[in-house]
Image (cartoon, rainbow, N blue to C red; front, top):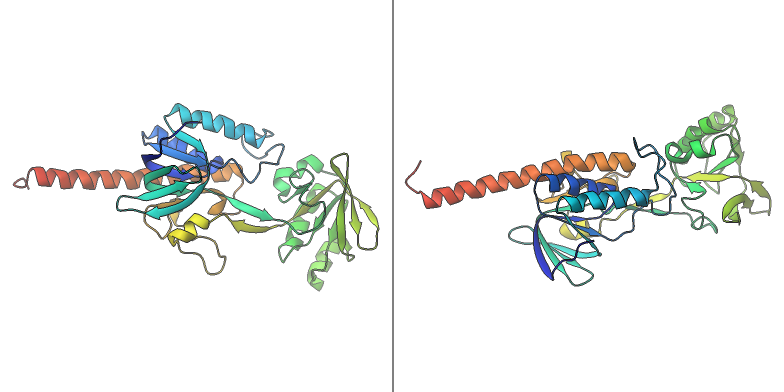
Length: 319
């Protein structure tokens, strides 16, 4: 990682060094922009052993992808610091970002790619097995556990659809309601697809040799399972954006972003899961390249306006 002085200026400050932040930094570096990436090294998929669905990188450990990404950003002159952005505030020329280390960076444009946090049910064993045998995305991890004894745990209205989706990876699937209601129409769909509905609450996940071995129900019954899928509560890591006053969607509670990740605050952009919780790694990286192009366009427009003003001041008699 690069070192930075106490206060430095950049064309773009990017907060977040995951797939989205690094992809944007790569594109901006290739556009000959000065870029700082503030990387807290806490990506959402840090606990996952492998990532899937990323063309040409299927099965690669996610942290290895980020190491390659950092090297690429550095090769184009980007600056990467392992730090945490505590505060961002507007200035006359852009934004001032204060880091936990005490360093300060200013950027003409600010990109926030801080991702989201998966809030898991408070069930013993759930957090410990997260990203190992407890998953959210069947497209990401269904193949690896296909035809095995699986379970889904209800967390909200989307859980029934999630369960019906997972059914195509296995015939041995149990849907643990865990106290959540189930509409008769949904019960009929699940039953028709051969999915067992478990009414008894889930007590804990049983671990053996570091892997899931069973689900323990409230009455002590052990249900042998190899993996669990659920839809956690998703919380955007949007503290900086909230402080800057970026508008949120009143229905979803997520930051409103236009084409390319432009927020309601001029000069502030979003990319990755903080912008769209549905994005996988490859989608987050791809969307961020579009954001980078939009940021560069905004910088070009500002550069042109400044040049026209300077030319007019230097040659006031020239029309």
